[in-house]
Image 1 (spheres, helix red, strand yellow):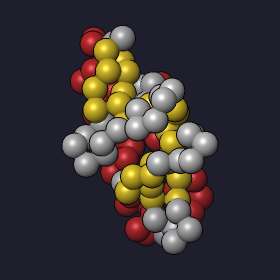
Image 2: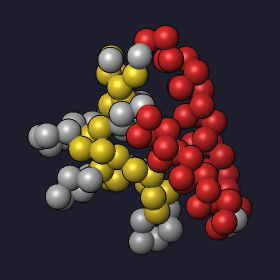
Image 3: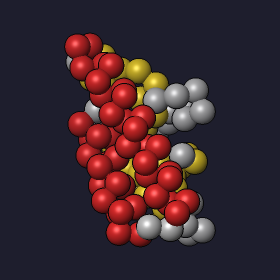
Amino acid sequence: MSRTSLSPTHEGITLGFDKHDDEVRGESFSLARQLTVQLHDLGLSVALDASLGTVNALLAAMAARCERSAPPADIEMTTDSQGDLIYRCKHKSPHTWKV
């Protein structure tokens, strides 16, 4: 399994995947993330919950990990206290990134 960064703006998040799945998973993740942001902006809470579940399933399938602290921790997409979409790791003191 290879590891790559999610994006330059999400330093510390890496994804693990098999090379042959690289393109398909990348496109799927990008589409799911775009959909989640659009649903959030429209205030469609039921659809937003479903899309958050989809993104989190993709993050799990792609073995997304926070590597800012040891050992690496899983990452999920959720909302912060202001209702904005964020990525949050499951370290004891979680790290967060804006979507």
